[in-house]
Length: 288
Length: 107
Image (cartoon, rainbow over all chains, first blue to last red):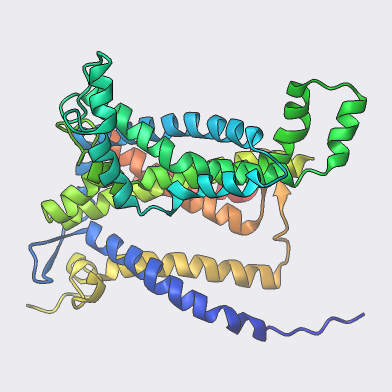
């Protein structure tokens, strides 16, 4: 049978292409243009070559922010992914409680990010906040506005509270898609709960967990609003993540050149890591 | 301002208006990437063979994937060179070309 060759359908993707061009490609190109020039405002530019890249790559400030960013991202991934899977496994599969659990789980995701930051900011204040005051009453010397360790604890707790439900919902979607026949077969074979998890549930959840890990990785690597409202990068610079540092350079100091160079390096790191994650996680699938 | 001599340093680096802060050098960079993508299309049209294959890294890659890996790898080669050695960047450019050849041949 001869297939008709008709390429007109390509025109249907044109609107998307235009949209992406204006919200992603043009800004990205502008950032590249800024990264090799110096400006003192008024749209007057001077060529500076690759000096901004050299400055950023060799600046201890950037290294520290990158280190904090990596620590933050891997910590929350290590907590949120297993916790999300555990909660999803514990959730009911049938009955009225399903909707109740799903709505409860979706709630943190519906709250605007800056509100989450403001909520936790007040919740954790040692003098008036419920959590801050309670921890101090229990004898802990807790003050996230003064102690870096406490600030990190609050930051990670806030992210876990806000985003674990995303992992839960995705893992749950993976779990309910497993046909009953698998469980019946496992029961006949006398499989333990661990074996059922290891050989039925986990492989079936793999695809959604891949998406969950990728989403959480990219989002947490880009995170700005919540930590900015909660700690503003402090105390000192102890919770200054890459995005907070970037905003300080770009909008605080108005150093567009260095900020552009930094955002490009930042972008490349995210691109590389996402690609590695994606490739590693989809490789086994192709092997099967 | 005095007119820049064609292909001189000033010609490459002078600002071209204010919108998006273009210079000829950065425009050339993006034209190179666009031309690479277009060349991939032409290549596939005349010599089809872009189906995924398994290379040294044990991952399935199409020709487009290999272009992506070449470009992303090149960016990191330049970054690493800048970090460890600094300018000029002619040596890393050569390494990038070798890297791209390696990726297209073996990955």
